[in-house]
Amino acid sequence: MIKIITVGSIKEKYLKDAIEEYQKRLTKYTTLELIEVKDEGLLPKQQAMEKERERIEKHLTGKEYLITLEIEGKELTSEELSKKLEDTFLINSNITFIIGGSYGIADSLKQKSNFHLSFSKLTFPHQLFRVLLLEQIYRAFKIMNNESYHK
Picture 1 (cartoon, rainbow, N blue to C red):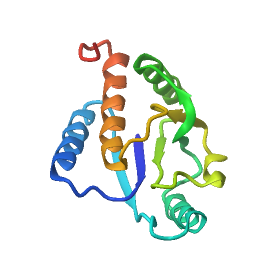
Picture 2: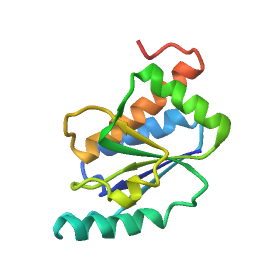
Picture 3: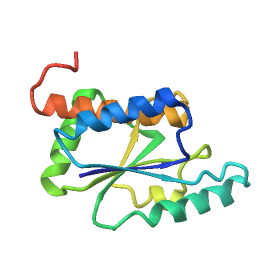
């Protein structure tokens, strides 16, 4: 099972449509759960990150393999991400990805992470990034199953 916990909600229809499409595609490979928690971007940075951390942690069991999306994380190719997911599924059938809010992810939550992943040093809109993550997870499953798509 893959769980994606994100701070903030999707407002744009075209992004909602893209997310729904990847959700549908991924049902062939895994159970997918998408969870949104409230964005606290109007509060001071530390206070906002702490409130968001509390909301995120309510959805964690402590038994999942936790991957945090961080600009400082390790960058992987699509093939490397596929291998990482495949290897992780051998030891834990529950993988949770966390996409933080506009201030990022609280340090205490980063410390609980099993893997710190970065897609780029670039900054992406959080709503768009959710689509990028879903697409890369879908691509990873296609690679794992030796199916055409990823090139």
